[in-house]
Image 1 (cartoon, rainbow, N blue to C red):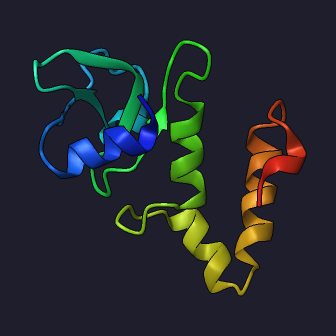
Image 2 (image 1 turned 180 degrees about the vertical axis):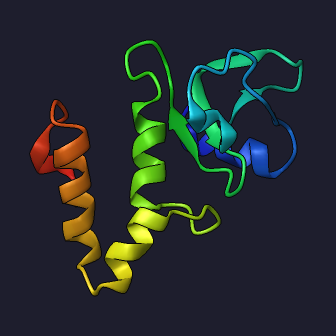
Image 3 (image 1 turned 90 degrees about the vertical axis):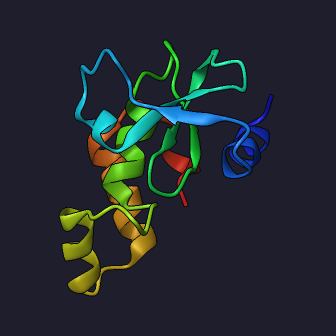
Length: 114
């Protein structure tokens, strides 16, 4: 099942968002786990509790995708003071995104942001 399919099922109410029980990261203040209509956990994905956007979150990626989402301020409903300072200072949003990814996630492919 694709992320788009899961997002549409969250929006139409077929799938629900539930808080993460094993909270080892602060990203779970913003993100939730996804359960299907049978209350079965969808293990490889998490969704923003505010905008309902779905991201991969599995043993391979961990919470890195979720941290990146928070750092670059993708969700307009989540306040991000660091990103906001860059934007208020007149910085180019794409350049800020690339800088954050390069600085905080050096092992990701560097040419793919943008």
